[in-house]
Image (cartoon, rainbow, N blue to C red; front, side, top):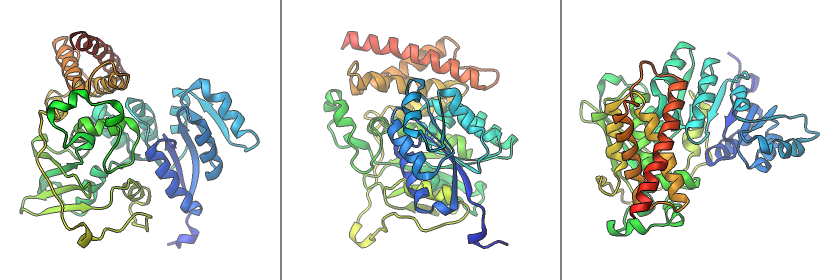
Length: 400
């Protein structure tokens, strides 16, 4: 067996390198450059950061998903030898370039297609894009199985579950408990939520994340997606998946076994832990995260979530019961409702009703059923759900 110094560098690609997960991934790779060879980086409009990352990591290729940003990207990379491209098709092409490990950190349903392309190459996919499993879990996991690829979870909760299940039999699992911080409004009076602003919703008490996921944390839509993701990734009966509010954000998930034991994963609220675990798997290596002082922490608190405050959790269970294209519709409606809230077209408390109206209407239109889950079917459901969400948001804005 070759020693560590003799191992070939692991070829890696990062989708969404300029977002919060991507930046943390870049940070970890940059600390041990001899262990990695960066094949490609993809990002959005922040082409300055994308180019800076590509040069720092010695990437072979850089892609912006926005064609109008290509000229700037090429200008910033001039003379470096790094090739560049733009557009969704270019992101998918980057997924086909030979790599050993690919981070999927693109936000939203846009992460599904490149993730599928990566799995078709037999690549290990580190999945931070929870929408892929929510919209098309059976398609994603089926593609991985057919091509001998592996999917590793990067969400802190699902990484915690994955670690808690190591060496255990799934038949012994009695329940899964995922934790939620409760976000910005966990202690607000219910009657004050309707007046909450995007700025107030964009401040997380524990985690440093992008705006959209921070608002999703406040509405608990992020946790609703994670409940569905838990079902799809681990094959757990939805009735065995629980959510508890844990304000300290130190216990990320617990696995309960039929002998009554609960295995908890405890760590600081730093995404580099879950990212590093997936990056180094099956090894564990030193990570630059804080070490907890349990005596200083002293107390961990938990409480049941209020579904009046967070209707997203109830809707997630209805989505799992419906199946088919309900996950795709749920995610698209959620993304559209969030857009309308950020644009101040609807109130914070209108997001749940928008999503519920979309699901009800698409169910009545028989638009949630499918003979076979495919990328095209998911895209069609996504498009229709966004249109229906715009109509629902307009209705709510009129009656407000």
